[in-house]
Length: 297
Ligand code: NAP
Figure: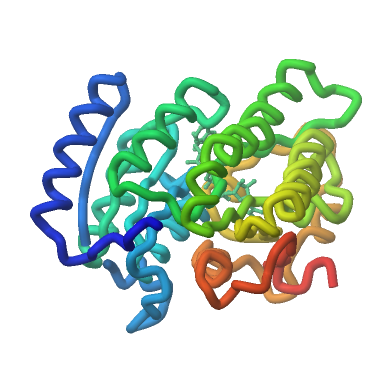
């Protein structure tokens, strides 16, 4: 049985950070350790609940948008958080925000579509604090094309990141999550449920994430592991703000993807994921929660 991480074990934490930092640097990855919990972290709550004390979480896509908000929220709720993204600088900002808020976080740069990097990253997260209780797969990419113009390489890249990346992190994490009775939350999308104009590739990847997660849930549920998805829609993040539309589209068709009350910040997703990661969701498995402001209702 794994013992919970002791949040106040500062010396042990520092030694671990140094040890893991060395290991990770040797593996050629950027590594950055920090500790701390923030108002941003607290996700608009002055005093966040502490449902995740003694738990260790790994969050991909933690350098931006929803992944960053999730990392900060889990840290605010007491988890030790291993933050993963492509970009060293943005990861550092996430860890700095967690430290400012009094949480504990380490950063590991990783391309989620690389099998070797994912394997090394999960190993590093487990080595850091000796256990893994939660995995949030939030890394993702979005592109819009006329379906008849989609290049095969572009199709493959979206699948590589959104589907294979999620698959690889689940596969490598499950043996560790089984030891702790842990859980997974994967990022699906409203496009997993309804057509997204010009989003054929993205929809294909997100539909597959939803189906794959349900299969994980039923395969491992009897062994104490839970796996759920969230399906965000109209969340204001760098992804949704910077997406390029193909030429000649009637943009009003995108109204079908808009929340009834307008876009919302990524913290609205982070709060739901914190609940799913906690014992409050002990009887929720194989579920998908739409967080779309009523778009598909
Ligand atoms: P975001 O702000 O772009 O954050 C995604 C992060 O993942 C970025 O830092 C991105 O880096 C990183 N990433 C991309 N490819 C990667 C790779 N190969 N390895 C490691 N990290 C990689 O997007 P978001 O809106 O927060 O989206 C988070 C998740 O929610 C995604 O899976 C997305 O599909 C899903 N989602 C979002 C919405 C929404 O309305 N925003 C709706 C439905 C679903 P780069 O900046 O370099 O790409």
